[in-house]
Length: 328
Image (cartoon, rainbow, N blue to C red; front, side, top):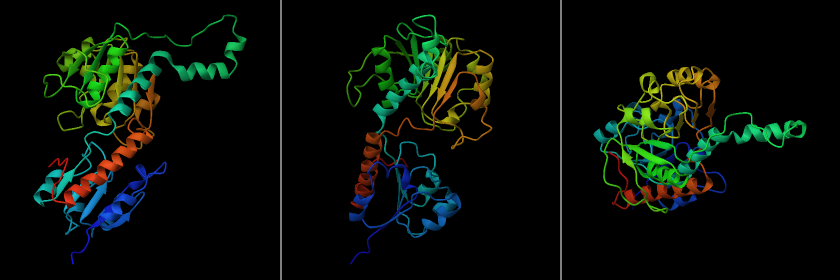
């Protein structure tokens, strides 16, 4: 009789909330689940696993090599930079990710950040709650400039599923779209409505120089690390906004803080940081007109449920001999 595979979930808390759980794994093998796990314990906890599931728990080469029976690593997310995929390949270990689960949620959140930069709804609601409208001599007041998006240009860096959905939303607001991709291709229909709308390809510097809103939707790779640096920020319009719902490492944070404080761009909104949780000395925390949210663009209940189901499906497919979404 074959021994059932041992499946270890390293940081399952990110998905096991709002009634979600990992019970669907139990039909696939012996399951061991850790909600949160200190980095120094990952190697010990995963030592006897044949399948490891990780969201952000790091799996460098030395940790992978501690697990002699390891055959498969399932990343419960799209980005898989937490895994040394080259080391896994050398060991013959397959690594999978979930390429699509949060397209709608991340695109929606991108515009939540952008609309907050345009209108500062929270600030004005707080002012009303504090009595400023009741004390006002006028029927209307505003504490910040208010910005209309119609007629402006959205620059999208990374034009995959999420970038294209953001482009669709930009069109709905009456914006034009400039797109930059490492591998530009003919437009294809998105995986869900609305219908695809036109755009124009542009180089990186052209996007930074021409767009009124620059939105980042590319993966973090050695080529894209620090993509938003001082030189490119020097190209932007002083009225432009920068949005980052992708990876913090795409941005040189000190350069962005300096640009914001120096008035080189009007505002920024970031849902990610180079180091997470964000460090207390991160320069963006004190930067002018910089909104920072705690990496939640992906985290709607609906998206997390899809992500968990797809992760379990990747494990099941690998164990059945037909691996899916393999990245190495």
